[in-house]
Amino acid sequence: MLLKEYRICMPLTVEEYRIGQLYMISKHSHEQSDRGEGVEVVQNEPYEDPEHGQGQFTEKRVYLNSKLPSWARAVVPKIFYVTEKAWNYYPYTITEYTCSFLPKFSIHIETKYEDNKGCNDNIFDTELKDQEREVCFVDIAYDEIPERYYKESEDLRYFKSDKTSRGILQEGWRDTQEPVMCSYKLVTVKFEVWGLQTRVEQYVHKVVRDVLLLGHRQAFAWVDEWIDMTMDEVREFERTIQEATNQKIGIFPPSISISETPLSSCSLTGPASAPTTPMCTNAPESLSVTKDRPRKKSAPETLTLTDPAPSGAPQGSNLSPLADSNHLEPSTPPSSNSDVAETDEQ
Image (cartoon, rainbow, N blue to C red; front, side, top):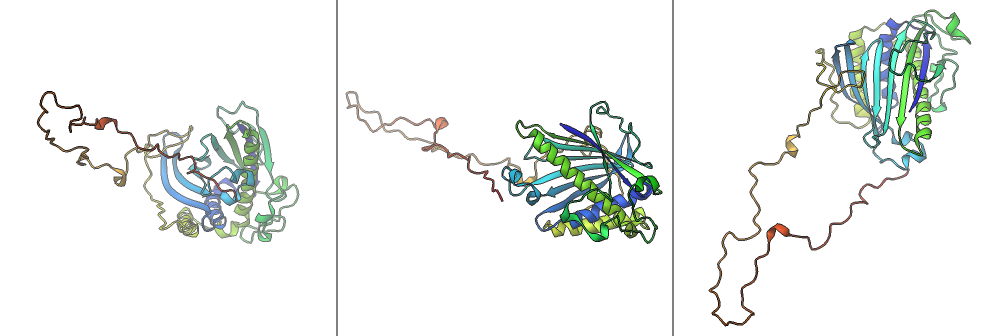
């Protein structure tokens, strides 16, 4: 297990970012998606939690095979996705990533937002608070971003908002810019496979950091697009863009439901810090077995025997022993299925 805390400051307020976060996530997911790969939205519903109150639950599938390094693509299926589940009780959120193909892999992210410069060292009141962890400050303007993600219009060293007049962000902007808020993210990565654990956990943290840097840069670079939106307007934008994203990656038909009725706490499975609930185990009708299925007959219902041979008859009579149908064996052993799950290295 590798634990790190990321602190990402932005020239926004926590209340403003409530809208900006939703807008940024939807637009970012759409931009990063392409046919066959990207972010498919499976569920997006209001959610009621007894401890944290009313929030929003989302479930997504992140298809990213081509984005994996070559050593990882060699051991995973060609169709590969990570399941993301998020519980948003803004300004507190929980996000979990799992993969059915890699049962020993998981990412757990707890996030809290505060109106400060990232100076709160005791913000996380969890069982991990006493464990040693690295604190990483992420500068949305001056930290290096992967070249494939760079856009001049999103370079905050030169960007100034027309509607808020915030920016350009100079060196040391956290100490001079007003307002300033901070996203505190406690990220736990687990990959409990001997020989690969350290390498995979370090790689995943690098990916997480790049995603956080890009997402928070875009949230401010797009501020003029969302700053005047209401919650109802951003939810409508979210629904529209999510349907378009599902179509973009080839999910037909899109089925996004953003209802106004909160789900009960027993309708979803939550993380350790969210309510735990059972999952439905009923099989779909297409897999149900017909109850009145006729029994297959392995022998005739009646058997007529010839008259017994008279005493003294020779040993080779025409009466043969009846085979026991309860002990049938195949004439050839079943073939091995070891070649079914082949993986292709791209």
